[in-house]
Image 1 (cartoon, rainbow over the protein chains, first blue to last red):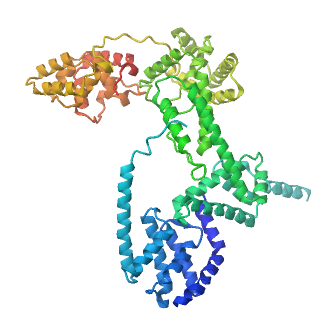
Image 2: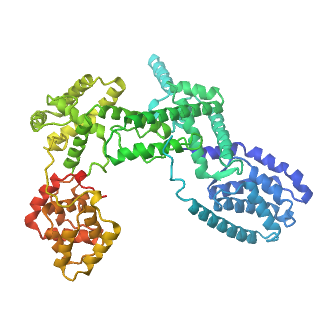
Image 3: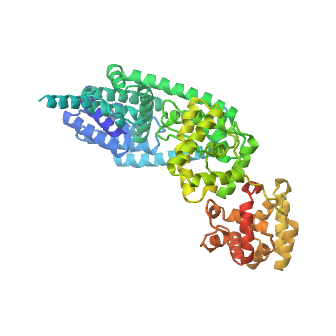
Length: 162
Length: 477
């Protein structure tokens, strides 16, 4: 299959549209004193592509990036000087967490949990946030394994009638 | 000048047409797109539009897959969903007789329509497969062949129940162990299953024309010739029945007879060893045609049967050349009555408590002779003997004493179990097998091999019995 090639060619063809969509978000974030320059957006898009690739994920829309900007721009711990870099790092943290929680938790729920801990427990520290989310993912997987062990065998007890 | 024009025109014609050899059944659409681009029937802009169309479908399906909870998925999941989308597109586009028409269609209509019609095609194929499965169940042969029974009773129903037309259309999630006489592994998903079922139905119908007892006897003979347990091995029954029926016709017998007499064998041997491969092909083909006429085989089945001819001709030609026709042409053999003192009946088995108590008694004996006497007088069932051997209640020379006290038949039965792999299909005798440096998983097996090495005078008789005893006379699992 030429899947990777097809994915990449598609991403290239809509890159400009993504760029516009992200720049439009400045209208909303400027009330919190946060703006992305066209260069910031280009870097953000490049970093996102890199992160998706390195974490083995595919996303055919900008929804997560837009939601990240929407949710985190209200944080009192994000300042204009570090805004673009913080967003880049948050992308990485988010997609890593998606993998570590085995895609069992929805985007919105994860983003809001990240934001809640970022503001409250971690007071804007990305390192603390990563540590906290690592623990969260570990606990989540442990419980998942426990649940799956309890249900083991259920799937194999098949009804042979069609 | 004129010839230059002609050459140019010829080149243009080649460039403008699809080379079917470059198209694959899976992934058909992608190979069609590549070939369309190469032949100039698609522009790169059109190709991009088509790709974008598929990507939009993929995007929607990702949303559906995550129930709208997530916009991203792992690359593996995305590739899997896309492969399922392309499988549906393949199903539709492959239905066009001319690939050029499929390209025209791809160019002209919304990709979503290609996909939707593809899904309809896959659904139809799935429904046909379910119907075929019901027919297979109704025509299933009553034979104790594990792979055949498991495939029909378990694997196929699991596939039909779990098959996902939208997200897993390209998967053939079934452990189908029973091999067909002719299989096309280029197919995937439900198209593979439908073809498997169609062919299995033909095979069942054919085998069902023969007397069920004759079929069972044939399987036993086959197991004997191959020196394996025909119930647990992977082989195709149709091929076996067909070849025997062909040999029957070739030796003047009936098309509905699968058991050949020694005289028929000798006639065939004389005939086949005198022929070249071309002569064998002609004789086999002639017999197949006669069999088809005699049994009123319908056209689809005829085609399938004809497809099996090559393999049969090659097997016969090879065997004729190497003087091993007896492995290909099976003759009827009377089962030899054996004086087996061990019972094979499940009903004679001791209860677990009885067995534990007896094993305790054996282990408390001080003298080896006493242990052996106790075992020989109190153990009746073969299952109990195996349980006893596996319980490690004997030590060193005690094993030798016990095995020496066994009759040749019992030793031959144990040898058939311990040396199953070595005996299977090989022409090695016991002396040859015992000379090999084998690893045995259990202590009693190691001691058994070592004891046999010390019984040189009995090995010839044991070898003979190994050939005579069939695995279906031993129920040890």
